[in-house]
Image (cartoon, rainbow, N blue to C red):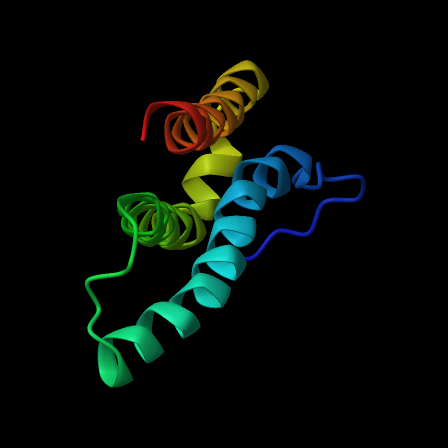
Length: 107
């Protein structure tokens, strides 16, 4: 039985977008970084690639994996309480900020 409701709640996509944003940015940065790394591996020695680049590329790959998981489970994500959605989004941003700080200061 299909039931149509007037004024049914629309899903709020704000936290989903906020949660997915760092993954999108990491995917773009990882794609840009992959070009010179691939060219160096194919036509150069590949030994001149600094560890920071490898770290950033691996963070981008993990981030894209999380992005795919969030997108695949987006309806479950949207079904969570708003506080939990905000906490998960904030956690993803914090994880990306910590990875960036690690790449800048520790490596």
